[in-house]
Length: 290
Image (cartoon, rainbow, N blue to C red; front, side, top):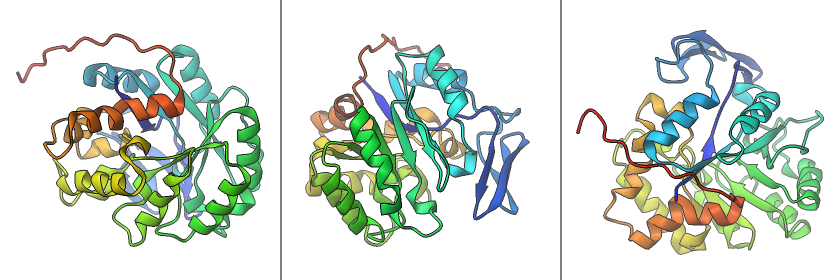
């Protein structure tokens, strides 16, 4: 049982970064707020980061299910994610996107994404209504904070007012930044979990097999318990450096984690948090390099 807690999809990228546009220019590249970035692997030549491509990667890596989150840099993908969930209802949980000063949706979605790090004024409590409505409707909230403890105090206030809402903190608390453990401490609250989407990006300078990232997982487990940590790939952006399977293998092939820890981290904890019901059988397929 393997569950990816952090992936992205888009049919057409139309986002913003620092108030500047982000859009596809072909061959996996995007115009990114004034510069050209390799946004996805170069073989995604048409700019369409589709659900079919994600499912193919999941099948090869034997990943049973995935959570599709969102980001300002891709633009609002609510409609596309609804269509993706309709095609693969047992494989996906999807998030709508909360955008400052705009209406947001919960109906039809499993959760909602809050890009708190990208807020104009960084005031997280401005979005407390989202947490309250998610709690009332049984949805989870996926949130990514500004570095360190900048928004941790306000998050504590929200948790105290909404103790029953499920909260998944992304990017492993921005683990390579000062003060990251303050974000991890939030997972001491009963319904708060940490997911590792982007951890290979944050340790990219070290590269595969990312031993410092594995050590960070163990450090976080000492703070909140291994039962509160979930694996995420940050597909497809991290696939510009490594393959999808490598984003999982650095955990499954590590000798620093016990088998029990691995099972919790790559699937069991996410199953408890997200509540996937049916797991497809994904037999191993021998690949051409073997």
